[in-house]
Length: 462
Image 1 (cartoon, rainbow, N blue to C red):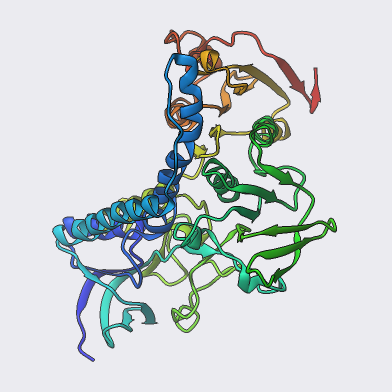
Image 2 (image 1 turned 180 degrees about the vertical axis):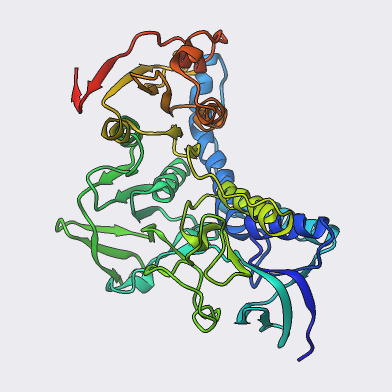
């Protein structure tokens, strides 16, 4: 096997791996990157990007209905699933080509191959049956949906990966899980006209989000017609003679659906990569252990993104990649900052959030002020849609620092991105109060809530 010497070899062509490869190559380093499936990774190929496109598609029925209140007469609409899938595929292919081109344009080499680490400085490319040598190795292989092999009939279930490319739109679907993936797909399928049931083992959907957002979203989803069954899990799945599925739940209820999607978490892609053979330390869940600078226990091998199971978000992987470049190639050791990360759930209505939830804040601070506003957004005043918006600020009563900001409603994700800046900067409620409002907007509520709705002192609401 012929050998080649690289300054950096990246395993995994997702957002984090591609960013690291491209920037390192632009610095003049000799870089190789291997991806066994498609460049772009989870986010571009089977995650954030196609999901957001499907969210847009699923929102049109409400837009058509709302138009009447504004004087529009919209003829009866029809939806074609194959058209959406085909158009999505075309856009994903375009983005995939850009990801690959960006690496090559910067001077890096790309390989469509599975890669294994066979030595701290040697990577075996299975697709080409050859080895390459590298001074530094970066593992950015991401994660995948967690399977459920213990579930009788699990072979009949699908995951988020398959949901994007179903041959036909089901008439009824059950989704098991209560995280953001389950919630987003429940809203997507419902918006496309599918009879949708969400089944979750917990007492409320979206654990770790602020409880006010969780409750209001739950109520709104049920008003739309999505069935949500909490405190329940699937005991078995059986294929019926007519091809449909019977899902037996722990509640004793049986659901008959066309598709059953499992969204019960994600696990790191670390199997069959030779990691144990070279002595890389792993967690019990199969994630790669790294220090604060994304370095494994082997000095020249690093890992970023979902494969480390720190924060499973695309922008986090990209941030970790940039910190890796600073540390490994610029002589500027930089630890990724995982504090106060803004995020969104593209449910309908969507959620935007940054910082501490109320429950988290009251555990850390003795005096917490809660500013809360619930109202009908202006866009619904003429449409007549009975859907509320929620704005909430969590403030440390002693320092006046804004600890958390939480929004449920139209454009919540966009607002969360902007709110991430003042919260990251540590600004106070007084800074919010002296900021002029933009009127008429929903976001003006964030700077016009002058008096706390209530306070929580020493864990007690007053």
